[in-house]
Image (cartoon, rainbow, N blue to C red; front, side, top):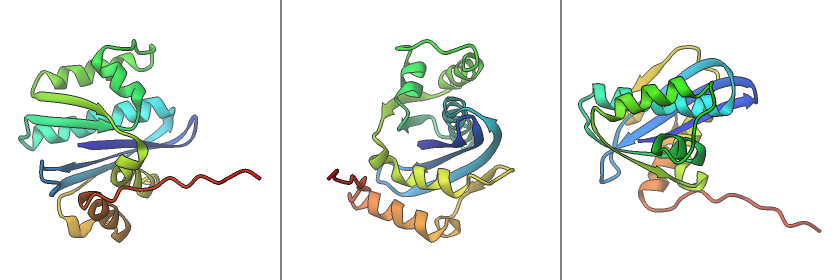
Length: 162
């Protein structure tokens, strides 16, 4: 499960997204949710919660959660303590973690490009959506998933200063 959050401003309009694939990279499902207004850390935690809950409700018990938010991975693994705003979400996620076999991984943004693309695609959503068919994803997201599957991750452009 790759998750990502999108905050249009900080604080700003929030959206969380996730993408589940099997251990061969085959698409299983994706989700997209709008979360109203808040901070970037809150949206990353909420996306982790939604992704885990959905995975568990679909019967998956072996879950590797990957996020490009090192803070979220550190909070969930106990290497960092949450702020008072994040404490309730961390507690909810840890409760879900007890229902399955979960491993946590930090992944650089370039390796998380399909979830990142979903986060930006669904930033305007007000309701939650679960996408169970690969064909129902936007073509740009399907392309990112395909590139990731064949091992061609996204490349972050860096401009040279004069």
